[in-house]
Amino acid sequence: MGSSHERVKEAVVVTPSEPTPTRVLPLSAIDSQLFLRFTIEYLLIYKPSRPGLEHGPTLARVLKSALSKALVPYYPLAGRVRTRPDGSGQLEVVCRAQGAVFIEAISDRTVSDFTNRAPRYVTQWRKLLSVHVSDVLKGAPPLVVQLTLLRDGGAALGVGFNHCLIDGIGSAEFLNLFAEFANRRVTLAEFKSRPEPIWDRHLLDPKPRNGMPSSSSFITLPEFNSVPDISGFMTRFSGERLTPTSVTFDRTSLGELKNVAQSTRQTYSTTFTSFEVLSAHVWRSWARALNLPPNQTLKLLFSINVRDRVRPNMPLGYYGNAFILGCAQSSVKDLEEMGLWYAAGLVKAAKDRVGDEYVRAVVESVSEARACPDSVGVLIVSQWSRLGLEKVDFGLGKPAHVGPICCDRYCLLLPVPDQREAVKVMVAVPTSAVDKYEYLIRNHYT
Image (cartoon, helix red, strand yellow):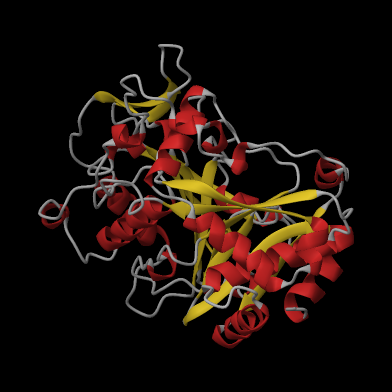
């Protein structure tokens, strides 16, 4: 099926259900970095409703009402992001209850078109979030929600968040609150007795130096260093069609990966997490499938939640961007020849070096030097499997599928419904490399 199989019935602006503050709020240095000026796009697929649950137009009304309530405590998501007028390049959000966009659509797809398979091509599901914000600073709403009713009675919910305003953890917290309002598990009055969502973006701004040297002057930040493109890497990814892939690792296969890494490790006190071995295995499989020259330097970039890594810790309920990029780096030769333990060790070391001083060095670099990761030799991994997206229940039950709207060269680790310890790996690979990649990732652990 092509993306023309969706038809929009209505698009409306949804504003907060109660008066909210009118103000201009500054975004943090982390929020404002160039790397985050895009939209997080989620796709949640729900099976046909059980008898007695809401359908069709009634479901749309329920969701619009719930969204308007969720926008009260999260009122910046009804604002508009812009560059600060002081010339600093930092961002701010103008809060005047301008509203989010809610779209209602229909499709002749069914739930089975999404479960247990990758899309045939990268943009096949694009129209399940038909308002795609390509420039988050041109006055677009920072939140777009699209309900698409499927032919078999199922439903697709596409949600787009301006990443400058919110990170994965924050967006999942918002979605679960949105679902609670829709499912009538909580009223707005009851929610007001809970701890409020926390703005406090100043906590991730540069600290006054008071004559002290910059943190970034003595801490190496490999994620921002460029490497030579000796393999035509960028031309390959821009010039060749990408093919989406989807591979699920259950508890048993994750255990096998850990056993391989542990049995061959050279530092015998080292143990590895599921994330460390899985991201290392994906990185190695991807690199080997691309047939790059041995001396090409590759990087694996992945998000590290720093809420508990800074001092003092970030407050509970903080929903801004509170992560930085961990960076594992290797030559193609070492990545291929040294084994899974080596790659997993690089990932582990990248995680372990992130503490308060490292975070402060990143904050200074993105604020003062406008530092931004390069794309040469880079695979970016984002872990959605721990966000709780698989629990978001709008009264339709838990989702049958959680994933992105579009599958691209960013690798996503996704939750698998009804398999708590399983992880689905979704990434688009150059078409000429896809067969080798799928063989390596499914079979070749050593």
